[in-house]
Length: 191
Image (cartoon, rainbow, N blue to C red; front, side):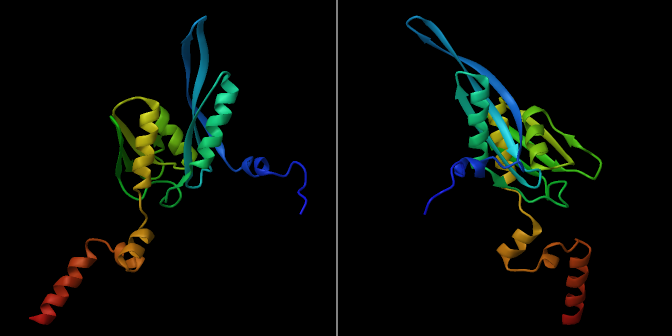
């Protein structure tokens, strides 16, 4: 079976649905016999703004090549995060990686993204519109992004919890007022 020229893996990867955000560029040097050789390391966050996000890092002699490598790695390492109403998190969560710790909280509509630097890039690429986040500890962008993704991967929707517990979503989402009233009625019926 003959393949069309130019219709390989590259065409599949170049999907316009993903947006990327450059978070950090470091100039790194290697000392060799004749002096120093400089290179660049790039940190990129990629997402579809509909609940999928990933990050990647790339190193090369030139900045554009480092960014390209980082973007390709980010597309390969994407994770899906459930969002409430497509705009915020389902519940408050914490993430950790090394000395980097982050706290992420749900927020009412209109709050916006209250988060710093690397965390903001992750939330924007994820498609979160309302969130309050705080970084505690390391301010290293690599650790902050890893800690943020660690917390986001622990995020679970009511549907996921109901499926795991073998219940209906309505049972999981029942408010605190309804449950005790039902228990009291059952206790009175027994007495």
